[in-house]
Amino acid sequence: MKNFTSIFFLLLPAFLVAQAVTVSEEVSIREDLSYYLLDDQRGNVLLFHDRATKFIVQGFDKRLHKQWEKDLELDKKRPAIIDVASIGGDFCVFYTFRQKQHSFLKVHRYNPAANLVDSVTIEDLGVVFYTKKMETEYSDDKKIALLWNIENQDKINAFAFHMGQMKLLWARTFTTDGFLFSRDFHQMLVDNNGNMYMVLKKENRRSKQDKHYLEILECDGAEDSPIKRRTVDMQSHLTFDAYFTYDNLNHALVAGGLYGDDHTAKADGLFYLNSPSNDPGKQTLAFHPFDRKFVNILLEKDKSKNKGLTDVKVQDVVLRRDGGIILFAELAKDFVRGGASSSYYSHNGMRPIMDYYYDDLFLVSFHPTGELHWKNILHKKQYSQDDEASYSSYFLAKTRSALRVIFNDEIKSENTVSEYIISGNGDYDRNAVMNTEDKDLGLRFADAIQISANEFVVPSERRQRLKLVKVSYEGNQ
Image (cartoon, rainbow, N blue to C red):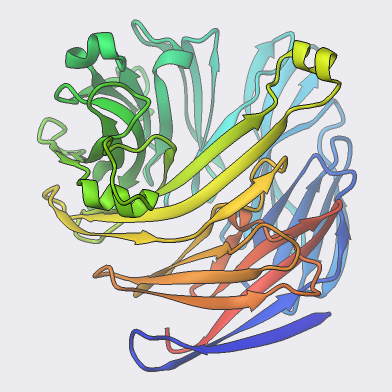
């Protein structure tokens, strides 16, 4: 077991906060198709290994000592894991399996000791040549799972399952006029009552700019009830990127996004949307163009003829209690060197190289009226090569008083991990969290999980070996 502690002073209020960093011993993931970190809500961590024909759970205590290991028995006929999710200290395993030419959707629930406590066959999917992969979304309270897929570009299959009650809330298959998945689909989400929302981008192209709108399809699961539809006129702006979430406290569908004035390849400003569930027609939609100074600082240019942004992604939306939001966007670019065509391989005998640049974040806080509250730029520079950006980007930890953005300063084996601490009024501070020199760590912060208000666990992956790293903050938060 490896332990080390780093102590530093914050510059916001003058108080002492320390963090302890605990690192587990190595675990082999050579045979894993995927793995999942799970929180048992007792301070321990579970690690689920999907090895296609074998499924293993390992239990780690508070100091990340491995205490036990157990094989799980799923159905014998080609079980395929869809997802694994924590629920109230237990965890659920969603999977499909084949039996007598039929495909079935099923879930097992296990307690923190990985003992089976319940099992439900959610749906007989019928006779299919192959089972199309299901996607999953979870409600904000992490009790409801929405499982869904799209067939033939236009047919939606959706299942809302309550993991706490271990029962299927509803199942629907439907189509909608003029829907083409690859062209129109944007996002799927589910609220704490099990209502599904599917967001579509319609006519989102320059030739139809004045007709572009967002379409939101809502399914409440009531038997034979029609799919509800609401639209958002984008007022001749094109949608560059957006992130939707459901505000269960204020009962509204909200979004933060980026829009383009001329085409979808460049973002020219920000938008905020609030659509109340009890009165969908009463929408708040506000647009704010980028100012040139903001873009110049973000792109580190003294002058910019073009005030828009091209390589940027909306990564998160954090809800404010008053109905406003904080939008998180990140400068991110993937660049192929050498080309990826077959002729390149044959003529040069070399494979293309993929470069990944994940740089500054910018945060924008919106009032529920759509007015801007504040915006800030959080500087970072991350470059990597041929790693699918696995060690880039950041982890967002949330507490009642602040947000923490934790990330690798550089993508290399010996590296400093830093964090920004952001308060509700936009003030922030940057601190060093740890140094990985001589620790043999490769921290994947985008895959970290928060296990309490002051603790998170991040996987470290190097050479098909995995370590778990827990960061615990001490003192006043």
